[in-house]
Length: 61
Image (cartoon, rainbow, N blue to C red; front, side, top):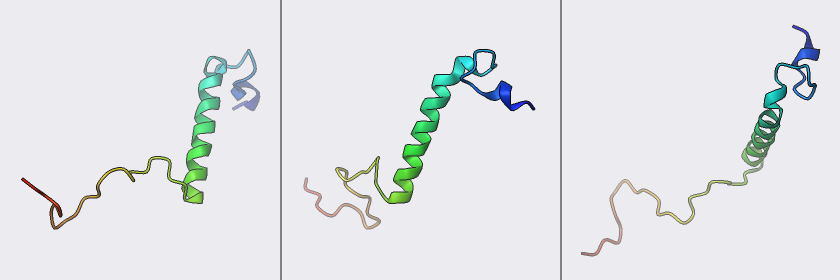
């Protein structure tokens, strides 16, 4: 495999039409890996009530 043909930013590459998709995918993957390793919660459910095995605690009819 020739790595010169794999470079998505060269016009003669077969991956040239997908260059922006690959760049955005790499950036999003980097952000998700960094947030996972640093403990920063991107998709936190802090506004939602957590599930409890003993049922609802404050249920009023």
